[in-house]
Image (tube, rainbow, N blue to C red; front, side, top):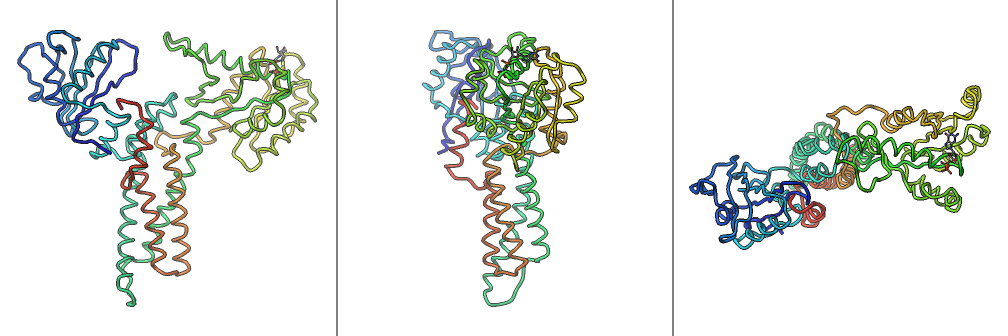
Length: 467
Ligand code: GDP
C-alpha cells in the first residue's frame, strides 16, 4: 500500500488566495526539483542545500519561465513526513500550479494520494495513528474548542499513556503465557496483585476516555439543537434573531462572510447546530403538516431541546407539553430548555406567576424571552453552554473525539472487565490471557501499534490531497 520509495507531489493549499504551496516528499525530492529550478545565483544545487533553508529562483519548462518561486528545503528526518521534502511557494494561478506539478511528474515524481504525506509521517514514526487522525481534525476544526481538542490529540494527548499501559500489559501477558508453558507445574511468574492493579488502572483510563466521547463528539461536530413548539409561538422569530446576531458577528470580519450561512451559532467556542430549520423558514403551516412524527425525529437527533411557548399560554398546557418531551428523552443526556416567549406583550406579574406554576425537573432550564424584541437572548446563549457543559473544561483535559477510538476503548474495557471477574473467580489462566491479549490488541489499534490495511485505508481516505 505504501509506496515509500517513490517521491510524491501534490498541491498543499486550496484554490484561491495569492500564494500556493506545492509539496514534494521522498528521497528524490531535491534532485527532481534541481531539474526544473533555476536559482537566482545559478550556483546553488538543491541536493547540497541544508535543511530548514529557503532558496529563491525560477521554475522553468525548457526556456519558458513558469514562475518566480521560493523553495523551502527539509532534510530527512527533520520534515513533516520524515523524508527529504521540498515545499514550493508559487503564485496561486491554476495554470502555474498545474504546470509545476506536470514538470515534477515528468521528472520522476508520482502524485500523492489523499493523506499520503501524513501516512508517511506515521510510517516513519513521526507521529502515531491517533496523532495522524488529529491532523485531519485540526484542519476541519471550526471553533476554538474543536481546535484545542484536536491540537491536544495531535501533540500526543492520551497516546503516550496508552502506549505505556499497553507495554505493561504486554509484559504481564507474556508472564502468564510463560506459566501456561509450564503446564502442570504450579508456577506463578505474574504477581496477581500487581496484575490486578494494572488491569484496574487501564480499565479506569479506558472508561474515563470513553466517557469523554459524548462531549468530544459534541465539540468536534457541533451540538444539535431542536426548536419545537406550537405554531405561532415564535420559533422562526427566535431562530432568525439568533442567526441574525450571529451573522452580524461574522460579517464584522471582512472577507469572512460565509456564502451559504448554515443554521449554526458559536457560543464560547462551541458550535450549536439547529436541526431541520427548513420548515421554520417557510410557513407555520408546514410545521403543522410535519406533525408529531417529525417532531419526534427532531427531538431524537437533538442534544438540547428548546421548547417555546407564549407567555399567554396557561401554565397547564406548558407543563403538559414539557412532560410529553420529557417522556421522549427520559434516560438520555438530552436537556430541555423551556422558553416562555413574547414577554413584551404582558406584565411582569404574569412572569412571576408562571415562574411559580411551571414545573421543572432537575436538569431543565426555564427562561423568559422576547424573540421579537431580542430580550433574554444573551441569557439564553449563556445558559446554553452551561446546559451542555456542566463542568468547565480545562485545556489539558483529555477528550476522545474519534469514534474509532471510542469503539476500541469500549472493547478494552469489556475485555478487562472479564479479566477482573476472572481473577476474582480464579478462572484458568489461558482464558485470562486471551482477554488480556484482546485488550492489548484494541489499545494498539488506537495508537497504530496494531494496524491493518483496512484501518489505514479508512483513515487516510478521509484526508485531503496534499496532507
Ligand atoms: P412559529 O410559527 O413558531 O415559527 O412563530 P413565528 O416566529 O412565525 O411567530 C408568530 C408570530 O408571533 C409572528 O407574527 C411574530 O412576529 C410573533 N412573535 C414572535 N415572537 C414574538 C415576541 O417575542 N413578541 C411578540 N409580541 N410577538 C412575537
